[in-house]
Length: 353
Image (cartoon, rainbow, N blue to C red; front, side, top):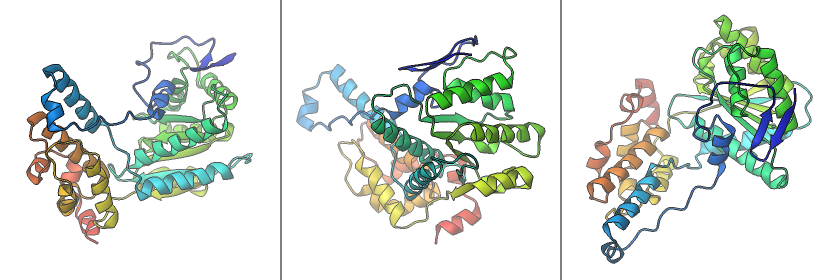
């Protein structure tokens, strides 16, 4: 089977498949991943009252739409978890550079909403941008692969996720799993893949036949692809993935970074302040959110995802309503996810320390 790599990515000849989802919308496609790596456009300037008065209705609408889009974007804050993940991942990539087998990997595990996927994608972003800087003329490289494990996944489904990322069309029943794996491994080797990111690992259960086959397939990929593998999932250490013979192999090769709700303290306060600095609201008084940091912690349970959602949601409401400011009442009006609204008693107690 021939494989070709173009400036836009690899093409595998000989594969005919169903139409893929529209490219560029998801991190689990090469085009989507590359769009994610593009620099975020700068925020629109905050206009003065005099400048706003001179705007036409169409210009005012465009101005407000630009501010709405700014607040809708997920701001990445360099939390301690993100920094630790990037540092640890970078170290493992270097240690694995000349390893022939038994390469070390990384697991990021914790409750939902604690910033696991953000840490994962920032590690991938850091690795790929470094690779681009070192090899500016080699546009056909694919330094990073990002996939998610589907619910009730089979080994073939996971292999197909690798293929889908790289644009290899895979039609059901047309190719067996061995063909898919060989195509994926060949392209990863040719394009110098150095980091493989696997999200939603909690969808694998080693207590089922399909789960053990998926684990074996990922292990086989890690042995054939000379890359560092990073797994992310919800409370992985509480699942079957680190128990038994197969689990022992994973536990013996992977470093685990746990994520938790943030306790109320200096880092939480700095997170609130960092988010407040991004606001583009005309009537908002700077420092309002930092004085409400305890309320925000109680409301979100220390979850960074819920905090970001609440502040960005309140900012959007402020623009749509014309109030142009965030208050405690407007924050309370933003509904949060069930976990943030109803933290477990143990987590509530831990967040108080």
